[in-house]
Length: 285
Image (cartoon, rainbow, N blue to C red):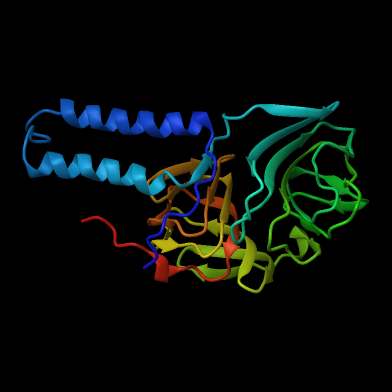
């Protein structure tokens, strides 16, 4: 079992505050609960309080960004860029760690050709809404495009407007090319879960997953960073509930508890090609 704590990504102040407030609220609720619900002393109350603290400790290495959080940059008229994750120092990247991740909102008739810092590196794009062109490649909703490293910034345009997810760099790049939704093949992945593989290389993979309400993935660890972007519905990642528009990055070495679909949902995942059940920690009794 790998119990070494990985270098912690920089969670936003809003996210740290949300986690700390949740722990505080749960602790107070337990403290104020009637005796016939939770005994005021003894093993039962202590066990509940310990589980709250243990849950907070297990999830503190995760970077969870809510749809409502974050300030948007405006690098060009009609363009808003909301950063989900950025490395801020010169340390070596973890396996699978991106340099930066962002959501880009393009108003109809907009163009962006600077301001993302993508020159010289590879990048990946997923169209979440609408249609856009990247370096002249036409992309529609749920099309995925991997761009090889070039010296120039990409030229992004949209006639009808679009929302894009972009990944900048990292040690494990997707194979350059385009995966189109209209040509997609969905395969059974686990009970109640189907997936559409966008690309796979070595031990890394990017895919879209559709999960039926109640579908479960057992606890697992991560040999490389895992990105999870919610496109539709609700999903429990361990004890953290993520909803449409929310994002979570699970660093290499950390463990997800049981993953369960709270409703029918669609999620984009980039991470291990094989789930690392060998790294999973025992769940508390």
